[in-house]
Image (cartoon, rainbow, N blue to C red; front, side, top):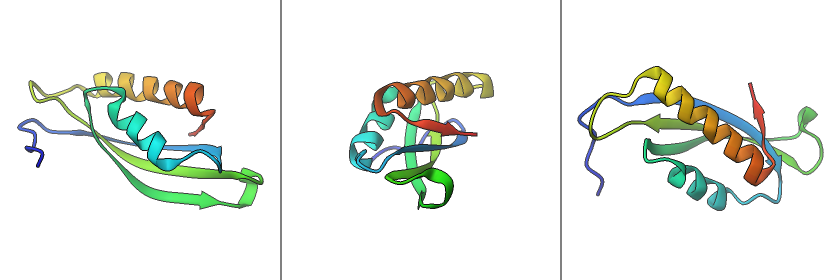
Length: 98
């Protein structure tokens, strides 16, 4: 059980391309533990084929940012979101899709 937040969440989506061998469970655990403001990460798309190249997949997530102490500003959430993208690049070799 996880108590719901008293303050509104900031929602963002992120999509990135990684090697097929990257394990989703490992990535999602790392994403959820990356920052205390990341309340949830929900998978909404996995794509293979097209112009991604052989052995690559695209993963898209809905992210919920929030704080139990106060309402986050969009700028605060965006700063963590950008840092998350940098972590995905560094640790998983992800290419962030704009």
